[in-house]
Each structure stands twice: as C-alpha cells, then as structure tokens.
Length: 145
Image (tube, rainbow, N blue to C red; front, side, top):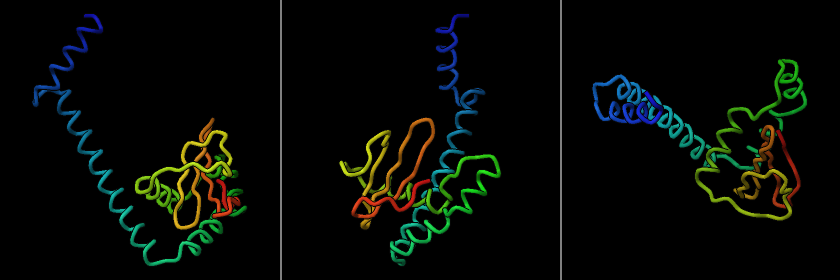
C-alpha cells in the first residue's frame, strides 16, 4: 500500500467514530482540552494576583528567586537555569493578553517576542535555547534566565 493510500485510509478511519484512529484522536483532544482548562484556571489566578499586588514587588520577588544560588543549583543538577513556574505563568499571561511591541532599545538579536506590561518589558529570545528577560521602562536589564 502506497503512502497516499495509507493516508486516504487513515482519513476515512477518522470519519468512523468507532475506528481505533478516531478513538485515539478523541482521547488526545480530550486530554489537550483538560490541559487548556487547567492553564486557563492558572492564568486567571495570575490575573487576580496581579490585580491585588504591586508589580514592582512581584518583579523583585522573581529576581530574588532566580539568584546565583538558584542558577548554581540548576547547574549542579546538570541543566541550564530556567524560569520557575511563577515567571513562566506570568510570561504566558502577558503573551496571551497583550500584543507584542517593537522597541529598538531592546537587543534584537534572536528576539522572538517583546511585550510591555505595567512599566516593564518582557522579552523572549530564541536560538539554540531560549532566554527570558525582564527590562525596566528605561530598557535596563533586571533579570535574564
């Protein structure tokens, strides 16, 4: 059977709700919908937290949580330092709810996304890895991980 024939058969199987392919696809969709609902709930908590707390205090806390001791601990475990869950959720919230911007004062090499939120720039750089950076309103780097 040629690849084209296999694809045609697979697409036919997807139309049959009792086929193995259709059942697997529906299970996968259900799993992904659950993940998305969990993420929406978490992002709603982030929104509420941001409404109740000062962004300057949040940024200071993120900086303190990603200090040299955190970086050293990551390296000792054998992996590159990465944003913790709080930082990741904040970035996800900003990227989903605010449009990207351009700012020539922010380094552009490998810049994937840049958002301005409550007086801070949030940048994500992608290359052979990724780097997440926070700049203040004067484009001074505050945190890069």
